[in-house]
Image (tube, rainbow, N blue to C red; front, top):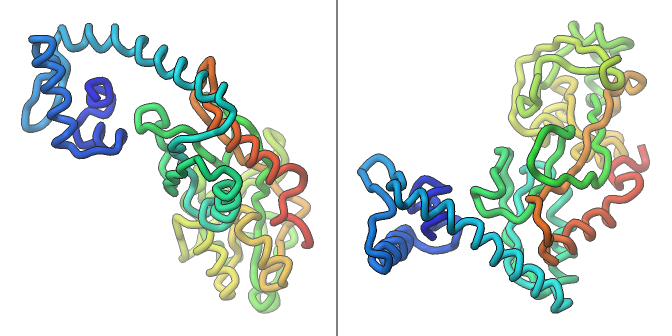
Length: 294
């Protein structure tokens, strides 16, 4: 708890990470200070900070805790059956649209694992916030985490047939200047839509009166005939199959993103994390279901 308090910067944050109350967190640290006979943390109404001896103690104790975790994981893995609490974070839209049903099947297959899943579009710090793994959509970047690519994620432009009949279908990316573009502000550069592969691609500036920080909302607006949306294909695959949306400018589709499972590096990957990553890789291998049939 002492280490968690310093990493989280508060008793409340440490308590949330370790599944207890802020009051209990404070009591545990006070008990440790009493046992050692020294003050480890300076407490003010605004902040917590380690004392000099507390900082030194933390630096010495953290490697020992990591060794204990490594030993614990190796023993659990040797037992053969994955068990324990597994904390996972995933993006809201992918989590609710695609990942939820897969995790339900995973829970059926591994009844001894306690799944604790947080859907958030915030980039979570796995180590500091106590998560075992993360599911993320994007491109590989510099990271201290280990990333396993599960499948490609296409980014497509889509509009309702009625909108295209009324406004005409853009023939080239530059034609988007004359259209109502529905902006997903979750993209890193939402007002510049990319076309073509990698560094050889181009970016076209777009604008529109509708802006959402959610791909599902963008797809629903496009389905209602309000414009052209740029969204991941896992959001609109069923709509494209059903014909309520039509793909636009397919020949210039940008280089696909990736769906990744990420987890902290370690000498012994916990069995519960390994079986989850393997399960997801098996579910998403080959052409994703949402890209089929259109």
